[in-house]
Structures are given as structure tokens and as C-alpha cells.
Length: 284
Length: 284
Image (tube, rainbow over all chains, first blue to last red; front, top):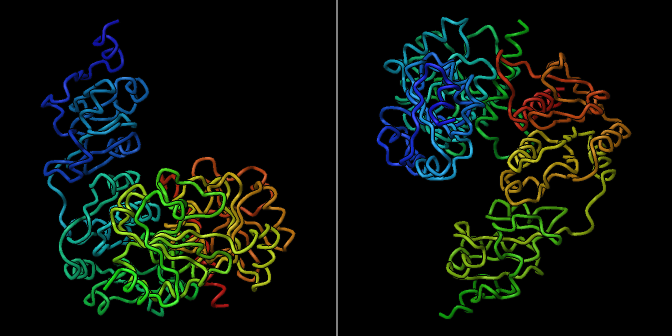
């Protein structure tokens, strides 16, 4: 059986294109993904089947092309069927795929994802959350750590936030590491990246949300949250915390902790508050 | 000013020993710490000033020796004073210290830590938690990921657990990565590593604790926890979860989550339950 036969048997009617040269211009977007660990102007890299599944059901993003290790193709045929028929499937042997990626690509599945249309504005995503039973909003200010941004998405999605808002100083959620740590929720949870803290604060207030600032010194605790009130939870980086402009206008909220403990991870703190709110909203 | 003058001026009465040869047998314990990322039979490596501070106040562990980048010595003189006077301070220039560690040692502070006496038994640490106003117990079963073990300690310490119990299949908390992620709480929170889930379950039950198993399918939620009752929270690895023997005898507890969400990180889940319990105990 020739290569093209085995490939066409897997994906009848799909464009399956063998790649044998790492310098093939068709797969340029997948080249050296670790070194240029940056959101490309035109799209992003999603690695592995978990992210591929989120991409397949994403309203906002779609797979523009796929690069798959040849021996992984049979195992992910069903998943590939869920992608749009206009997504070319490039297939390569291990040595070629490793040379393209720039390191040993154990997962063997890389998707190049793009926005289906122009990215939504801040007002659009906030209005959407408000329209969905005023789902809580999670606003991240100055979160430069990729793991933390990814974990904020994962935890936010677990507790049904309507949107994640990231200010311009926070890292972009489509960075490879943030995307991976989010276990794909960056692709399925509405979000907006950009603007400063004041702009974000103004936007949520205008939509009728109560801004709540997570800050260690606050006296109010999660038990005092009113589940009937639409809530926008603001979190800042460990160390600097939230800007004074946010602290001034938001209700402060602190998580009671043992003495002599400095702080919790920001995504853990957010999870504690959002879990509490979710349980109260579910019960009410 | 000679080297020995500058060093003795910093630490009067302390043994400050310059190291110029990476193969010097006195600093063998610090050699190639990344490659043999294992708990040494006789002790462990604590990296950076945060861990050094926890080592200085630890009841269970102490610094047996210290290896410091020469230009960092003035900045950490106060911290060194807090260590026992029997702890030799080895000092080296950057090229020597990097050659010893086996990689660029940005932090420039390495402590070799040891137990002050024999490690406490399971019964001892459980009894100690029970004697301290029956502080909650956190029991980790099958947590092989170093980050998760470190994060469980950090979150457990934040919410005042009396002891962390890890079964023999969980990773050892003195592994370098676990220690670092714990931000030093492995050194200041009582714990025991070893035994199987059944042994741990038996031990906490005999001490009068109610075993509670964190498991997605359970109907009881964190709101239903009785803060007056001594609680031992059991958590398992994502995927396999807790063994049937634990699920049979423990009260199941689930964290309400949005639909279509698989799971949370284990340390985040534990934090949500322990935070709830801590707030209720503080209020009660």
C-alpha cells in the first residue's frame, strides 16, 4: 500500500498532504515554535488533541491547517473529521516533524488556529456575559506569567465565568504555554485582551456589574458575596497587586488565611472566590 | 582588602570557607543538582532565600551546609545569622558555583538540609495535628507530579492544615521542584510520606478524624461541611482519582462546576475546600 493510499483511506475526501522537507513553505507557520514562542500576527499554535478538540468546537477560532505525525493520523481520524473541510492536513514522519518544530514533538499534533472573524471588542464580550444570566466576569490586571493566565482561564471556565478580561500588561492568552495550561478553555471561553485597568473597570460598571477587588487586606470575605448581584472579580499579580484606581472603586474582598502566610497563587485565589459564587448561584 | 577580610567582616565568628575547585569534596552534596534531581539519602537541596528562611525556622529540618555565590553574601548576611553556628558557609565565584551545580545558578544560594532527628512516624504527626485544636488533615494519594505536591503544601499551609500525609506512591515533598513550588512550606508544615491509602485512612480514623474524599461524582458540596468536626481531606490524582477502599469509607465531597468541565487541578480543588473550612472555623 502506498502512502497516498493509506492516507486517503483514513480521510476520504480530505486534503491530506505529505510533507518531506522541513523547509516546505506550506508548513512555515509551524516552524521553530519553541523559539518564537509568540502569538503570530495571523494566528496561534495549538498543540495536542485536547486543544484540537477545543478548536473544533470553538465559536471564535478555527483550525486553518494541521500538521500531524504520520503514525498518529489513524488515532485522531475522528477528531480531524470535526474540523472544517477547508483545513489542509499536513502529514510528516517523526524526523521531519521534529525538524519543523525545532524540538522533539512528542504529541505529534499541531494545529495552526485563526480567528473566524475580527476579534470581538471589550464592549461586545462584556455585553455577551451580561446577556447570559449575568455570568460572573473575571478581570486579570498585570498577570504577566503564562501559567497563571492559563490557570485563570481553566478555573474561570470551571466556575462558569461569562468572560475573561485581560489588561494590556497581562500576557496574551494565545501564547503556547498559556493555551496549554488552560487545557483549551482559552478557545471556548469568551475573552478580551487589551486596554488598561480603568477602561476595563468602566466597561464592567457600565454593564451593571459590581467590581470586586481580590486583595489580602480587605475585611469582607467570600461568605459575604451576594450571589444575586452580577460580579466582576478583579485579580492582580502577586506582589504589586491591583492598581489604586481599581482598589478605590471596587469592593475589597480578602480570603481568610492562616497567620504568617504571604499569599496564594492568583489563579488559586480566583478559583476559591468563583467556586463559592458558583455554588451559591447553583443553590439559589 | 583581601578575600578573607571581607568574608570575616560579614560573618564574625562564622566559618566561611572559599571554594575554588568544583570537585572539592566538601561541597559534593551540591554537585549536579539538576541531573540527580532526587532526594539524597542523607538530605535535600533548598534553593534560594525563601527556602533558606523556612529552613532557619523549621522545627524538623536544619541547614547542614550552605553554598553561596560570593557577591550574594553581603545581601544575605542577616539570614545566615539565623542558621545554626555549626553550619559551614561555603563561598564561590560564579564560574565555580555554576560548575558545581551543573547549570547557571541564578539564585546563588544553595542549602543542604537534613532532618534534626529521625523523621516522625505517621501516628506522631497525626496525633500532633489532633492536639492542635484538631487542625484539618490533608491526605494526598497517588500524587506523582512534583508541582502538585508543592502546591498542595502551599495551599494547605495557607489554610492551616495540621499535617500533610502522602502515600508511598506520591512524590516525595523534598524533591527540588516540590520544595520550590511549596514556597518552603514543606519545611514548616508537619508531614509524613509513606504507607498506603488504607494505612493512612486507618490512622486518621483512629485519631477521631472524619475522612472526606474529594471526588467529582459526590453530591455533598463544600457548603455542607461541619466546621466543628475534625476533617481529613483525601485527594487523588486527576484521572485515576482515589482508590475504591478510600471512597467506600470516606464521605464523598464534590465541588459544583460548570457543565462539560472535566476537572480542576488537584491542588486548586483542595484549596477550595480548605479555604471554605478555614473561613467557617475562623467565624465559628
